[in-house]
Length: 172
Length: 309
Image 1 (tube, rainbow over the protein chains, first blue to last red):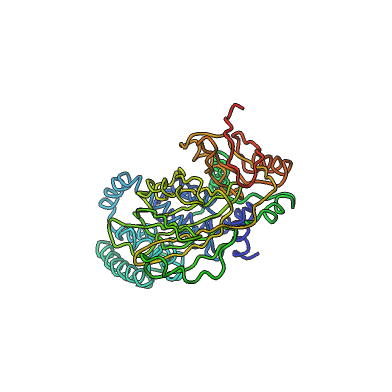
Image 2 (image 1 turned 90 degrees about the vertical axis):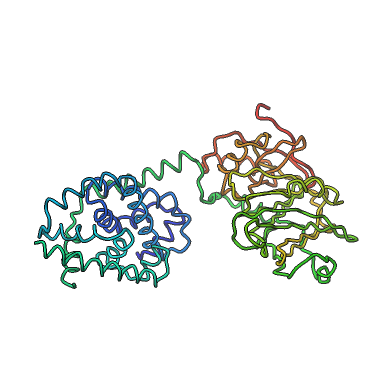
């Protein structure tokens, strides 16, 4: 059954359809959350919060074809909320790690180091565009921003990313 | 650069999906369910079991009608700006305006012109020129004959003092503000002595909504059975009761004969239908507070019924 039909039913209050939709999206939400918080438990918490918020407000979704976009928007906001609440802790953990293991070559570190160097907005756009492979149009919908500003955020992010990646190469 | 991105993508795809993921999602759904139960504000429309309830809505559609061919009223009112639209009513309800915030429903004026009375709503915004009306809704209902106006994006209701003056209209029995938990909306109701015919026009430069009333036809003779809460003062309890019943067809807040308030969860042609609806609201909507069925005639105000009666 296609997503739109399921979303239509979910909006009308059908729980099974809602569950099916979530099952199809939960990995994406988890990966995105994980790339923000880098911690399994916290990422799971964000998934739970996202599903909860989606469940209590699904009736407000007017266009079923935007279910995925809508859910991603909720997930992004949940992740940002989560980060804001625990900002200090992350900051403290992050700093020593960076200075003690500079330029570690493992890919996983590269990913996070690179993402770390970005501001919140560019990070979100990069993750969605290159890691989740979402079209720019969808990203603009998710962030509720004009396509042009999403593009400029993306270019800014890429620019910065390039510099950061080069720097870490120098160090290594 | 592409290589870097590829590496990032690889790392991203390598993020391990924990086994607990499905459980976390399920837990989110569970919490959602609990939230709904606890709040009992099930914001989905009631699924009416039988056709009985649906039939009610048909047999009791509003009999007051909009006035046909009403041209010429425009030049009779000198203060007006440009006509934005004439409201088309469906089931007694219509709305217009634009979404704004910080609007003051400034004053309401009453004008009498021969057979007709006009209520003119004025909007003002302290921050900017108020050229367009703020988003509003006008709803006409019966048992008793009532017009309810709500304006969203309104933070101030200076016109509350003018509600008294509206009573000078030959049609108006009472005019009173309604309590609402939304601090960005104002609402008030006007009760009519008899059925009215109405026309509502919206103007800009300045922003005004003009409601023209004249004597209407089709006085309902049959009584209805109103499903309602006990009477109570206009306070938070009342507003919460309305919030809890959100989604019920025909929901409205009314003032009773003694000046107390009640929330009505629709009215029905027979007592049995009202009882059945009550059961449905209690079971499906999860409304646990007491409800009462009251018999009422068309032009009659609700009775004062206290909770312990």
